[in-house]
Image (tube, helix red, strand yellow):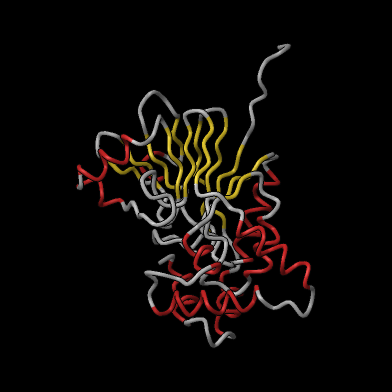
Length: 256
């Protein structure tokens, strides 16, 4: 129809955490589906062994937000456990390694330093953490029992919020339910009800499934996708870096 608005199919990814094998597998899946736009909801770096390579790939996304680990690489990390903190300091060293190609190093720092915390399109809000604290606030499945918290979060969104940060995919409803992707057959039709949707994690899933997770947003339909990747290769790389805790590799096998 002449003058009709073109429907754009988007991929929503989050929490790559320097896991190049997972990111490449997801990007391949996205390409095979003919998806035109990728939105990244933050935490490109941290935990994993390939921060530079992952940053270079994410720079091609149409939209990218700042995650708490990305900010930790830019500034002093706050609120991280020992393993995460050591990984951040190691990541910073990798990004500060100017000797090979100074212009590439500066380009990566500039990219991180310019990332916004919030992106909004009509009734859709995109954040890393939550509508209240886009960078740092976790919204866990069990928070549905914290009515005060959830009511406050829902009051801050117009209709739909997309987020990451917890690495646990699923849908929060305004009537205080959390629906895992399995409970909704991996698909949700967006309607009049407010929802908060966690898109899961590409590089470090924590819902018991080791496969990379992301979301496809296509004409008002949200689809959760799980993609297998060679996590043993990522684990091998982590083991080779003394500053990266071996647990950061081990957890990839179980999706924890």
